[in-house]
Image (tube, rainbow, N blue to C red; front, side, top):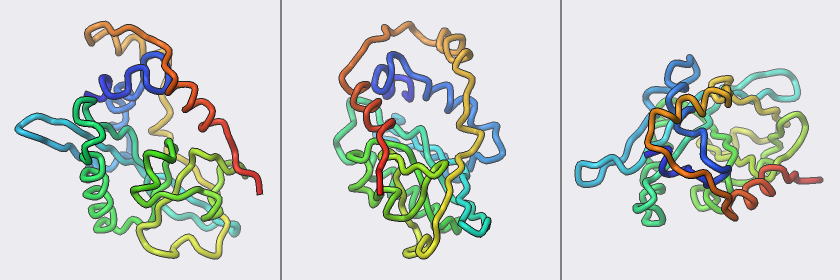
Length: 194
């Protein structure tokens, strides 16, 4: 399902299904936030979370969350299922006492879920504010009055040379270029200047 959802979306082929395969063995993976969505006995969606970290200007660290991959089977996309899945995950995350989520994604996919640009919250990576870096406070104003540096979990670092080998376990799919890949490339490399 993950492979089908991401195939040719951001790059020719995809690596998200391999990430889902490897992420579960990492200590930053949060099993309570590995959620699936079912419809008529069929799994149609999934979201997975890992811990991440914010460090303020004084060196104080805050454990937060990031999610990914998150997917809905293509035939069920744009029908509100992603909203249901994410909203449920936000509720559980709050119950687990997490205060914020930082992700990298297409803003058009996540602003309606309460995510906002990282610049608004003074959250950067290597002092750079990326357009695709989005923040959601689960506890209002928890990030206020600080400047934050974001560090994602090493769980999200994958060996791309192993993706091809893993992909051979599945029926072959053709790698193609799509306009969505160029759009993602532009957004993921663009930065916000103050």
